[in-house]
Length: 196
Image (cartoon, rainbow, N blue to C red; front, side):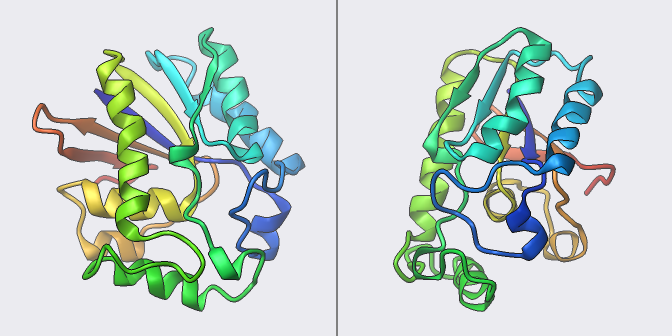
């Protein structure tokens, strides 16, 4: 299976750097809507068989033009939503949120205050990809969220290094391409215009 893992378009919460992780979440702003249209054009020649989006508004709005371009319906799954900020929802202080996520390198059972554990986060995302794999889809597009994408890719892509993750950005509508092996491991092919 080939995975195009895509961050949603820009929202007002992105611009103001707020931890906006609860449903329904902020919609795309005008820049984000244009990014979603440009994404559909940029991926027009890709052999996309399914488009998945999280249950947050911004993800579904980003997915809609891409799904329409490929003649498929958007498959909405809560498992690919953003990592929940819990007690820090809508805060501009990211310290505790990021500290907890980084602690998952050593302890997947560490829990976001008022939120979920690293194990729960990875398992819910994996479950959606397992569903797509079981459906026999060759190339899928998954519209997800910044912290979720970085955390999942760091945990699951076997060829990513800490240095690469530390120095590589994750802009709105960036496309990561990964392939899945028969052993259920993932290899990163490209991260935007960079290769590992």
